[in-house]
Length: 345
Image (cartoon, rainbow, N blue to C red; front, side):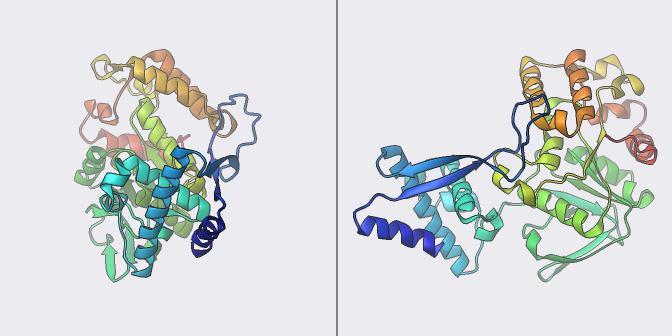
């Protein structure tokens, strides 16, 4: 960090305009032939910032302001959120996305992750099941009450002493499904760890899941709604997000398998017509865009088949639609049968 700022100061002191090279990353392309050579950690381009362009000078000013705040956080051993940083200079930053981009640029320039800058997200994820671990001075013991929810730690790098007797990890898209499983005492009956990111997962949830898989070597399954947004959440866990493509290697979970719900499950489990919702034009556009991602053809072509079926059927449905058979159908029939039969994609 000091070398970077010193280089800029030296350039300015000598009357020269500093030139900043920011690598750009992508975790997929749109070559659906499957013949591409995309890598999650390869550079896909370079953005060059100079003071000769006014918009670049403004970005550089913001980047240096954020860098100074980060330096202060590190020196004082404190943590702050992106929102905290924004409110330190709201008249300069003007909107949150400006700060977000500056933080990403700093991570790329310094070749580090966001938590290395002491910039943290407010964790929204939940976990329950056959698990015990510590974070700093706190002990999270889920073993005595496996169906009680605990918040996922913010400082995942401080998690240690992980102990588990679980057979697998189940990730569910939504808190409502997580609570359904808790009410059904799913973990007490099935030796498992259940996690929810409550929608699109935040960084702590993704890092925590990756840590558990690395430490415990357990199979992991993902249960999402049968719609393009559920599928996008599934791919965020497995392949990472485009926004944080530069840090995909620390958060992606290539081991995770798609448990459901599949478009083909509508017929297989006799989901009533009134539970099937027509896809909107926005749903169709999003599905078509996801179908163009290279990794569907190259890595998980079976996922692509199901997604094409979703588009062809023109209907979507939620996980909870399976409850039409019985309130406990999901926890007592669908999930155990899928996992025992190893029918996950």
